[in-house]
Amino acid sequence: MLIAAAPAHAARIENLNKPGTESYYAFVEKAVGAKSQPKTSAKTVGNLRRKTGEGTDDLVLVIARTTDRKGRVWLKARLPIRPNGTTGWVQRRALSELQPVNSWIKVSTKTYRLSVIKKGKRVFSASVGVGQPQWPTPKGQFYIRAKLTNFGDAFYGPLAYVTSATSPTLTDWPGGGIVGIHGTSLPGLIPGQISHGCVRVKNADILKIDKLVEVGTPITIT
Image 1 (spheres, rainbow, N blue to C red):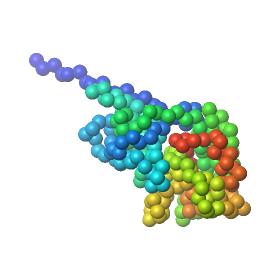
Image 2 (cartoon, one colour; image 1 turned 60 degrees about the vertical axis):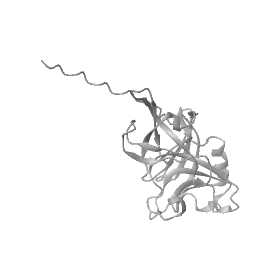
Image 3 (cartoon, rainbow, N blue to C red; image 1 turned 180 degrees about the vertical axis):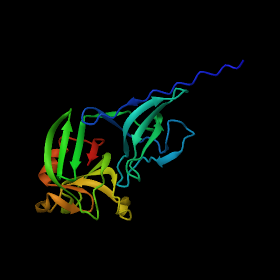
Image 4 (cartoon, rainbow, N blue to C red; image 1 turned 45 degrees about the vertical axis):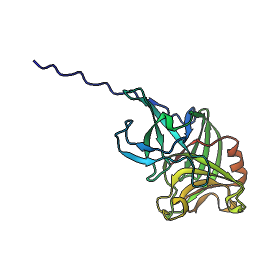
């Protein structure tokens, strides 16, 4: 008589996605392909690189963790690639140590408001400008990928955050239409639908935000 083998137990997946309380990001230590599942034979959904197009150290927002049958630790991350919302699994050795972050940026394209949540509480809110109807600001879950300053161009204000989001329409722009959160030389246009997809913030407000958030901070745009 044949006896059926006991079904293998699925690996436990630990949720690390807790925006505004404790989230984690990690720098890319090794250029690798991210997988659709936590196994080497799974389909590659995107490639990680050590540097961004702006020359900064690239990073990903880590949202889950598991261990396979061979004891290898896999991390699930939000990927800064098209299409928006893509996630993938990479082995732990491809990334740096996990870096905790307790901040969270929420942007409403309906009310033109940006809020900063820190340790579970809203600590800041400001009016913003978002994309025009033909160049909408993408909605979804993203993160701050890099911080840029010293532009030599007042249009972007004193600093800009490069996010993991990309424009759904401006695919032919440099960098593939990367969406930023930045200051402005035209504060009188805020609030409203005024940009090509980026989130524009008054300069005084972007400087306040800079004291509350860091790279790796999760972003939710609704």
